[in-house]
Image 1 (cartoon, one colour):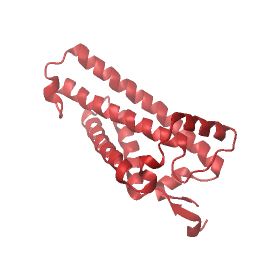
Image 2 (cartoon, rainbow, N blue to C red):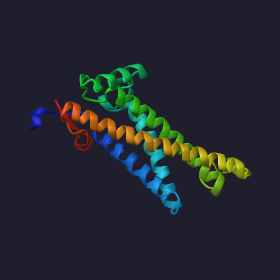
Image 3 (cartoon, rainbow, N blue to C red):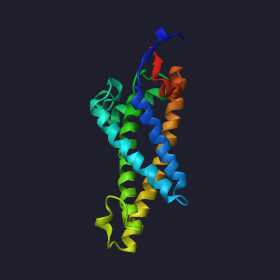
Image 4 (cartoon, rainbow, N blue to C red):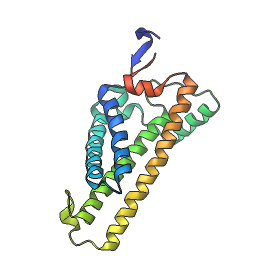
Length: 188
């Protein structure tokens, strides 16, 4: 494939944020038990990247903007059914199912970040919410911890679904979507 056969889809900031979000999530996930400092640093970095990503969803490049890929759940379901029947339309940016996944992932990662900041405040009396949790009960701390862990586990399920979707979409349309998220280019 030559350069003229490609189009730029993912701008550098989208690609950097995508891989940073993945790196921060996995760093936090695997450091949760033994390395609180690393877990906290990854969590705060994730929260910062999410703020930038949401802003970029309104002011960023064409394919990064929410208005160009957010659809209804019924459109996403129709797209998945079409994919299973091997006749789904090809999209340069996110397809309807991918767009829905982006929205769900951003929402869940935001909830994870907020619950993590609250948990850090409640258990360690540290962070920007520490003053709000000075006298929190052990039971309340346990509830926040459970919420944080359940959201984390749900996100791991979403990641598996996301990776499966990337694989199916890559096979269905004969293109390497992982490479596209690295280079920014997809075939025209």
